[in-house]
Image (tube, rainbow, N blue to C red):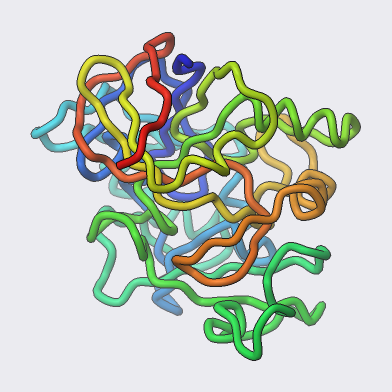
Length: 300
């Protein structure tokens, strides 16, 4: 297996960067989700997982003005707005411009406030969530409100399983294989299974077939010369994979196909979920590059 692609998302829920090389640290891919947009009115970390409020974030793109270096302060981030204008994270007028573009009072932050959380909408797609599997489930326990459609919106602590002080939804690394994408395309050739929909950090080219990541949780593998990652649990897929972003159209069938064909039990959160890809934590940091070898996962 080899590293086929590397991606970094400097600002949570904005489009990110395709990389040829990257540094893995104990906090994940260096510079990944280094910033987020804070809704000053509610205290919620903005996420496109609530499309009615934050779909506009996916019309922005973020990139570092220089490559981050481990152990040094991160360089500024350059944000391209939907109208093509560009501002940097250290520009004085950035928060006002973001607020005007998003229609809410927001600010760009680099440190999560105490008790930070984000919200997530659960679209009405059969098989997506395990609501029917127990008297009470994670979804019911985290429900805070409903959209006008009746669809549930949940509240989750930021980086519940990731490094403290980061803006990840759950874990510090997200890994996806080409074999999973190929299998999804076989199952539904009319849907758009682009890796960018799933916002992985690492895409692996492998010799397997089907949803090979399903068997990886609890195992460890090496990337490049030094980096080692431990796979934690399958990646539950959400509404964000269906949304228009970049050149990709709105496409609910991408999520329907996963919910119909790959439901995985996840003991860490309870229940059986629609999954594609796998979360991982960093066992040892190091430099990785596209084309680097990835050893077959072995028991941790």
